[in-house]
Amino acid sequence: MAETVKLISPVDGSIYIERPVAEDAAIEAAISRARAAQADWANVSIAERGKYLLAFLEALLSMNDEIVPELAWQMGRPVRYGGEKGGVEERTRYMVEIAEKALAPYIPEDRPGFRRYLKRAPLGIVFTIAPWNYPYLTAINSIVPALMAGNAVILKHAAQTLLVGERLQQAFDKAGLPKGLFTNLVMSHAQTEKLLGSGKVDHCNFTGSVGGGRAIEKAAAGTFTSLGLELGGKDPAYVLPDAKLDHAIANLVDGAFYNSGQCCCGIERVYVHEKVYDEFVEGFIAETKNYVVGSPLDQATTMGPMAQARFADLIREQKAEALRKGAVAHINMKVENDVAGSPYIAPEVLTNVDHQMSVMREESFGPIVGIMKVRNDEEAIALMNDSPYGLTASVWTTDTEHAAAIGDRIETGTVFMNRCDYVDPGLVWTGVKDTGKGGAMGVVGYHNLTRPKSYHLREAI
Image (spheres, rainbow, N blue to C red):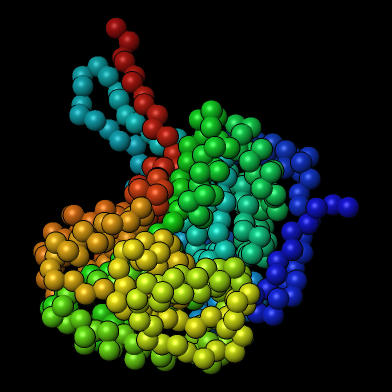
């Protein structure tokens, strides 16, 4: 019997869809088609490539009414949020718009008798391994610029969101993208490792766990395949005495609990200056109690189940450990089915926490947040940097220069002021330490999906 991948819905524990794993011969054929198609695609103008990508975008957006309930069934996001339509459109249009400039040749100072320039050449085949938590946005981050830069793309989507890969394939097919340039494949872990080790792909973009990133590096070792890795996070926020508290509270609660806390750059720990600590905590608790946990298919639900029961059980374990060590829980919301082995779990806010607790040091990736009182910037910065991760950090103040100065000392790939949990397509999405390497979006994203090629042309003597 052929191997299959079963998608267990967090809504009710049923098998939502089941798909056969691609045969090895089909994977080999996809690689061959991609290599041939990419050779022609590299000669297509950037403007013409953009037309295909915008047609793809329109095709994908036209499916949104079907996509929204599919996401609820696959990974638990409430239908009231309307899927990822806005972010997909923003990022796709922006990456198409800047492609000409980002990929333009660099011409150094003039030297008589020579013509010299540097071009951005496509890498070849980009292998995107996409996660389930923001299944469209994270895939778009590499797929769109990869194709715009002249590459072909092979997509392996997460088992939890198999239908996303199929929707992307449908949209590219409807847009008339030349055959072979984009292929969605259902692959096992063993097949993924085999492909990475074969040297038949030129770049791999992976978003997932630190353990997953290490497995990717190990599988690709010796092939010289370039890697873009966005891995774990434990993103902090620092609230200063001059912050606009109402704004900070509303945005930080959303940053902590949107998508059931399953956000790469979600807020997992908050450090608040002692001058505003009590007021901030009171407001944060009150805002959190407004969440409605339940079926993601219900329009009234603002927090659905986590994607898998084991993720929710980790949150329960972190909370229990913190309470044993002296933390105080403030929400204690009663939610039907919020028991061990269930993906349904209520949001929780903890105080009296410290960095001896796993909830303040290890990635939670769920609806729990710890809040600590700090005396000054020095203490806040030391605590924010006391982490093996470094994706984003946010600073909440009315003083831009002060925020920038604090940001210079924070060990993360992105520093926000008065916002959080956002990817700006005009900058770069990157991390430090165990959060990974490489970068997506913006000009840097294009540079990571191309290679520099120098032309040194000397006039005949």
